[in-house]
Structures are given as C-alpha cells and as structure tokens.
Image (tube, rainbow, N blue to C red):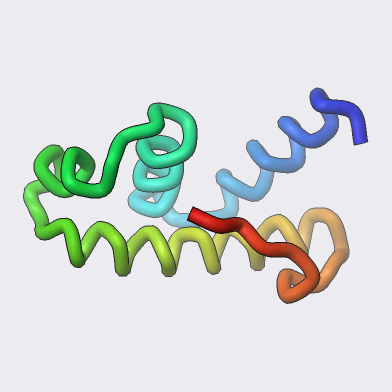
Length: 79
C-alpha cells in the first residue's frame, strides 16, 4: 500500500469507532501523549485511560479489518 492509501484506510477506520475512542487514539498515537496526561485532560484515572485505550485499539482493529476485508486477528496494533 502507498502511504496515502494507508492514511485513507486509517481515517476510514477511525470514523467507524466512537468519538471517545477517536479522541483517545489520536491523543495517544498522533499527539504522542502519555496515558497520565490523557487522564488528566479527560478527568479520569490513568487506569481508566489504559483500559479505554485497549478497547479503542480493539474497536479500531475490528473497523480496519472490515474496511480492508482482513480478519483483525491477523494484525496487531501495540501500544
């Protein structure tokens, strides 16, 4: 895939997840904010942010798999 094609797929998958998950994923992976800073900005605990990030990554993988027609279990998004 070309980088523009991949970026389009990522944007499409992000549109498929909830706005809260979008904010979390963008804060973590685009803005490169640590979990404690995200927690402070969201007004919740760092543990809650880590749990929500895990669910957000899972939802993103599922959405990305639907868009690319590949099973989400064949890819890993670490973080």
